[in-house]
Image (cartoon, rainbow, N blue to C red; front, side, top):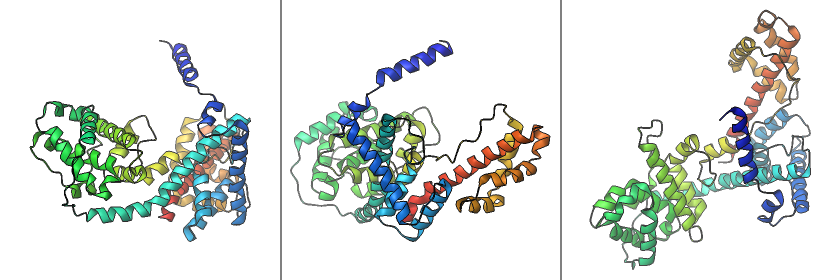
Length: 396
């Protein structure tokens, strides 16, 4: 297949999977008109709150620096909204929206990401406190009648996953599943996080569940962190990790109407490193739980300061030298502070040009200065991105 055929196949796939915006909006109970109004209100709220806190500028670097300063000093609902909206910006605030449909799609994605991020930040302290309580968990000794229907359903669900498939031939597995279900249903604190509890026991103790008669799991252990070897693929472990994650996803969907899914997700993402492995190695499905650190990496975008004039002729050697010079960030702290206070990046192009001996490397002063501006912009965008990526920690 040649390059043209590959591109055409990709376009065909995109066309086949395309869902009209009107159809997507129906899931939210919105029309194009009401969605457009909501997008405008969202944008207006962001800039109204900036004005409320004295941030009156269209300079992106200044806005990011000022918001960061504010949330270091004070944390409230206003600033949480401003921070998460800014961190997940996709063009609604600072981009060029060419039509209503583009604006709506941009708002819908940005609003969804900001809501998830904000909720996770707010829940973090609550869930940490509840986790501390469960780490001192004392098992309930009271008898509870086994739920044979749930026992059967959990058994059938579990053996669909590769690492538990051999449970079909076990003399003990079904009975041990019943004991697991009975014990979990005896403890309200465990019932509410069934997806995590069942996945942790079945993933960590599957051999004992399958091979040991009358096995009774120790629940205290599943509230201690377990790290898997996620950096090296030995030809088998990556498939196993994928299966563990698929089991959890299966369980969270099955119990979504009776369990506290957000709370369960918190345990799954924080008490093992499978979520981190998943987002580094698999095509992302945002239903798989993330830590706040991963969420920040996943949702926070680079916000473009501006696009300089296009440079037609590439200068690879000059690019390398500029990058090496800018790698020493401390030498550019004055520029960073200046830009964050409204200064112009172009004032520093000459410095970078001279430090790199741009004329010798490029032979054209105008082109070398354009490259300097481009590299300084990218450098400043990285600083801004780092500030946003770490900003959530101020709320914890």
